[in-house]
Image 1 (spheres, chains in turn green, red):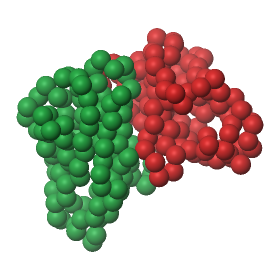
Image 2 (cartoon, rainbow over the protein chains, first blue to last red):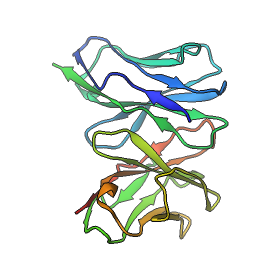
Image 3 (tube, rainbow over the protein chains, first blue to last red):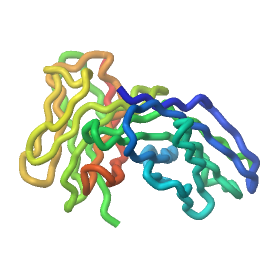
Image 4 (spheres, each protein chain N blue to C red):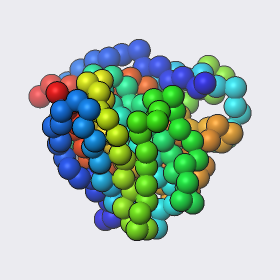
Length: 115
Length: 114
C-alpha cells in the first residue's frame, strides 16, 4: 500500500518568513498526483496545491510552491512570506492512478506562525 | 462557491447505539468518500462510492459500517453499533473526476461515543 510520511509533527515560522514542510511517499506507480491540504482550526480541509507526477515543473500557487523530487519520492511545501492565517495543520496526500480512488494522507504538520 | 455540507457537527452517543452521519456533496460531483480522523492521528480512508455502489473500502469499514445515497443528493454513513474506538471526526468528501480531481471536504462531524 502507498504510504505518505510527514516527519515534522510541528513547525513554527516567524511572520513574513519562509517555511518548508516535508513529505515523502512510497509508491510503485509512475503516474500519480500529490496534494497539500490545509486544515485550519475550523476543521474543513482545503486544497493548497496539487502536483501531477508527469509534470517536471514544480507547482506554484501565489505564496505556496512545492519542491517535487520524483526520484527521491519527496514533495515538500514552501510557504513564502508567512501570514498569521497560514497557521493550520497541513496534510500531504497521494492519489494514484492504478490504486483506486482513495487518497492517502500523511499524519500532518501543525504550523504555528509567530507574530 | 459550492461546498460539501455535513450534519450534525457534533454527536454524542452511547456505546452500542446506531449513528447516521449526513453529507450533501457538491451537486455535479460523481465520487463520494468518507474519511475519519481520530484525534491527533492521520486522516484515514473509510470508503469510496461511485455510480450508486461502493467502489473501494478499507479494513476499517467493516460490517458495522454502511453508506447510502438515498435520494441523489444525500450521502450517509451509518454505524450500526458504535464502539468507543469509533470516536473520531468523520469527513465526507466529493470529487468531480476519478483520477485528477481534488477532493472537496466537508467540515466534519465529530462523533463521541461514551
